[in-house]
Length: 466
Image (cartoon, rainbow, N blue to C red):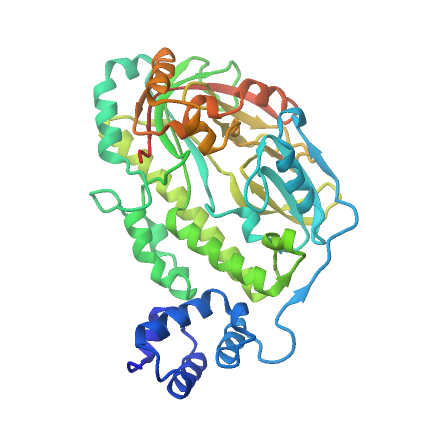
């Protein structure tokens, strides 16, 4: 065995002094025939999933120390309710059964208070996409999702819609030069933002090694359905923004917290699953108690990931608008993968998880996109408690990515886009317009939840290209 040092252990997340001493002591006695790399790989696995190593005599002491208890049970076991809590479904005819079943399972959790299912709902991981769940003093990392703080941002610009035709070439160049999509890499010019100086990067052990990647990825977007697009927005008379009712140029973006949010989600979901035992079918919905250390830490880390996602959109919009000499008259933005503290009409405080749902308290502005060839809606919430003050976050997928791939050719998609007057930079057939539900039906199913303030039509769209 190579010589194992505390420095090596710190690099793989072993930050506690007692834990490091314990590991070095056990390794020296029992793992003489392992190479240093084999041992480090094993220790990484124990750190990521300590519960799996509780039975083994050699690794159990390390695993117990990581979980934080060396005596008695390391987790609590819970049963599901006999009957689900109240859950209002909007546009139920257009929602597939597996998504409804997923929501029902979440409504059986002992910490659930009530649920709501939005008309764009489809099957997801943990909660369905379009699922909203209010819980009592508990946060479910997997119900917030992997892309914490995934969000929309809309800048309405001080130009009319003719700007898009006049400056099409410059807009395309700006999108190519100032946006970046995909899992790796970043923008050529290093981005600055105060979020990178957040003290939590030093205070929470998990976050320290993630800061470098957060610096590189600032101002970039992921893959899948994330986009940055220019289009025209028509504002309605007497709109809540107080702007004249006419057509404007606008910039719309959709993306989240990148690698930072994903690492936070994985880490705390594992902690929740290790400490909160549920029947197998519901295990991913394990929660963290808001009064416990892990729950408080997740809440801080989740909030940071949300702030980071917001910062990414701020850099995207600032870079593009500056490059084109434009000024924003108004910016509307909101998270749709997040958890919030909220209060129901009976005065009880709850934690509201929105997995692909737009916050829609009374007067709260949000954006609900359709697809590349259909409008996005600028809306104002009507504050319905049955919907847990929420609305849909888009049209919702009608096809899985694989089905979308199998049922559409690149040339057929180009024709669809051309007929709609849309230019696409990048993109894949998985995101073709027919992969999505009809946005008009989705909007009709939630008339009582939102008022329409404006209608945005995509014109020049940039997405990830595989």
